[in-house]
Each structure stands twice: as C-alpha cells, then as structure tokens.
Length: 79
Image 1 (cartoon, rainbow, N blue to C red):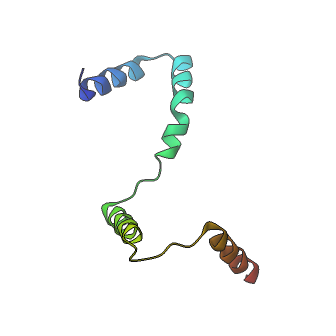
Image 2: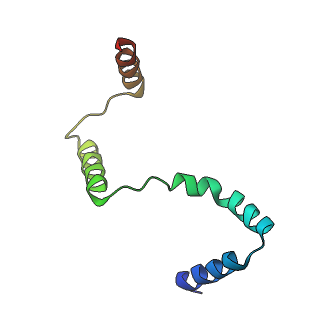
C-alpha cells in the first residue's frame, strides 16, 4: 500500500471515528504532534546545514555546553 493510500485510509477513519476512539488515537500521537510543531523554512535549514558543515570541517569551533550555560547564567544575572 502506498503512503498516499495509507494517508487516505487514515483520513477516512478519523473522519468517521467515534469520540472516545478519537481521543485515544490523539493521546497516542500527541507527543509526536507537539515535537513537529516547530517548522523551519528553507533559509533557516540552509543556515543550520552550513553551520553544521563548518563545524564538522573545523572552519568554526564549538563551545562546551558547560561554558555556554555559565555564559547564559551570567547574562541573566546581569539583567
């Protein structure tokens, strides 16, 4: 079965499902739906990819997480 066919069957099922089953189905996928709520446009994705490649190639260096956290804590304390 193709993905398009699967989506069609699921859409039809959801349109005709009773409320209790719909709430149960939603509970099963709720976390996944929330995780996908952030959608990046192509400009942002391109920027992420470029920075990732620069990091991998050694063109730029990363900062250890502890150092980043300390920096952010100092900035917050300054306010």
